[in-house]
Length: 297
Image (tube, rainbow, N blue to C red; front, side, top):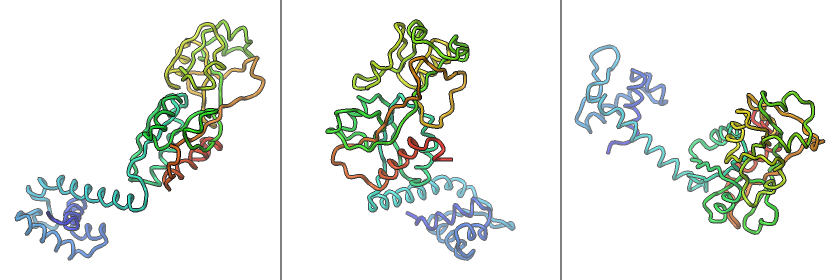
């Protein structure tokens, strides 16, 4: 198999259109690029470039081999990166779970930040309710999970408190509540409520049910869609600084004299040694919950 150094010279010359430009791209002399391509042509017994004009042009054989050469180089680089990560105790992949009651979009900037810091790390992202996330952590199938604080179950996992998510009362901008300064408890009781389908172990399961007419939805996004459709009013758990979703209105309720929030933790398997990557992720999640979206601006 031809060396990746020869293949890189071939790819750079094809991409830039000249041997001198390829040299500048790779930080090598033009003579080195020309020599590498000549060696590659000898090894393969084909002509990769037509050299009749001022600038070399890919030959028919060169065109046929270009994509394969890129695959070989990319595979070699990926192998070397993965080996380096493993030798440095940096995982190649990491399974990360999120409470499905939280808005997925609130984590966009966090994920971009992790990608910049560890560009070759592959994250497997899972959204589920607290009960499911806890089981996956206990089984070692999740490296880390973001869950609402679960009282009395910490013997099954290690954890770090992250901070709080805001709990908002939302309705459609077409809902009767949208025009009221304060909504009474009686109004809430007799209007349709859209709820997240909480797991059995979630502390908000009973506390958040206020109406006798309830629609249950699996995820945060499904709750919002039902609220936008003017099915009813509902609670929304949002990371600090997250904008109120389009088509909805935040309203005040008689029972809620002050703002309120839910505490969230990051959990991981018991006795699992935290790697550099996991420590970085936990700290960034803590920034997100304590400082909100401003932490990534």
